[in-house]
Length: 171
Ligand code: KMT
Ligand code: NI
Image 1 (cartoon, protein in one colour):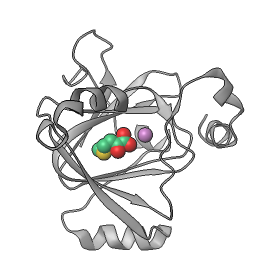
Image 2 (cartoon, helix red, strand yellow; image 1 turned 120 degrees about the vertical axis):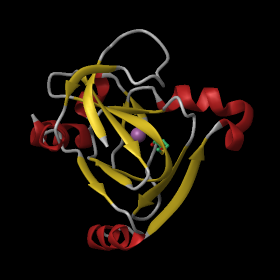
Image 3 (cartoon, helix red, strand yellow; image 1 turned 180 degrees about the horizontal axis):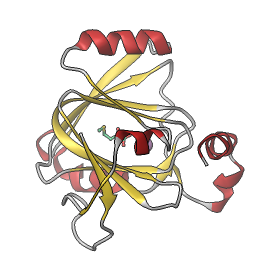
């Protein structure tokens, strides 16, 4: 894991976009984002059990796996959105970037590799992209039915209960 302020420079979203200004785990925690590292599945199983996560699947995002729709998928993952549920991702192989909004509405970029696990709280605005490697394999953890419908950023979402709860807790 490596976290830093996004540089906001035009260009391929899959480039590092590293401003050179690093972010600490504490700064991520301040917006509700939790990071942990799991060299084996045992501690992931424990975390899942403790939080009541009974289900999981695995997704591979790569041109090999997705074929023609890969570029379109990558673009879609990168549109700013939130979820009404936590988003937990455990990286099994490859690498990618999660961008999350800071309190001041700037992008904080988090580079994740194999064995990294991230928990995004409900209501946080974020986006995802593969890196230049164009390959990531991730485990997605969920409680019951996955509620991963991305809700794209809009002023109407200011009234969403999950968004309101997030803003109340983290700003
Ligand atoms: C998401 O929610 O953006 C994804 O699941 C992306 C692929 S998992 C790293
Ligand atoms: Ni998402």
